[in-house]
Picture 1 (cartoon, rainbow, N blue to C red):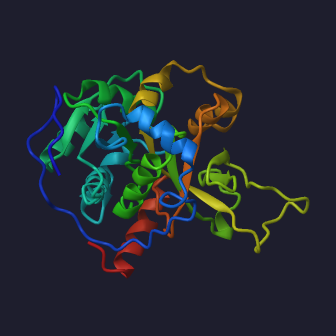
Picture 2 (tube, rainbow, N blue to C red):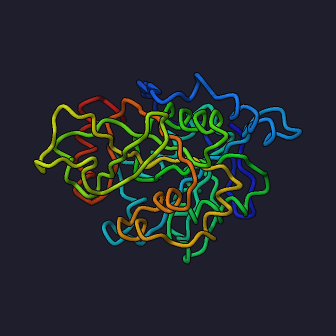
Length: 301
């Protein structure tokens, strides 16, 4: 994997990381059955380039200030900062040309440079991770077709999932965004920190919610229904990412406090893949102990 070039990057990347096999299974057609019309659209988009959306950068947005967990990127997970664990996992993805951390905090930047990550400093005015990714993209010297927004609070993110959403976007020229979901555990059904998703029968997102969707008349979890949990990782067509900050905030986005809803409300298409993944995001301080216990049980260092 090559090193990202930027006006504020660190030295070359190291090759550290720990391995874990993902059981990623794609159920919404990222390989098979691309429509003829979509293929024509892809050719038009391609122009003179040899491969559709071939240049890919992974960006990990990280900020120190957080209402739920101050300094979260720097919290240690079994002796390593969480941002380092996320970076190490991301670098194992085969579709990424490079991985960079985007932050507005000097402490996070210094920590990342110490373990070998490229860092791009971004402004404090970024309202969310997507805007931070866009600012970082503009500061990179190289040009990219796809930007993968890798959540820094997923220290066990599977490289195969990163590769899956990249390939999904490459195979869907009518989409500007791709993301991943997994099966929702019944005990997480009413947790507002666990975002739910519903998709159509072609694998495009319909809606995301902090509430349980779809919701039934009984008001209870239907153990027979395959509810979907949204994983934070997402990829963007780089041209769309430049447009995203200019889009007006939307009512559903503001009500749910979910930035991906702005994409849907403005009429853009979002491809979704389903993967077999035990989600271990760190939303609040109590989650640290849970993820450390999980790692110890499975001898993950």
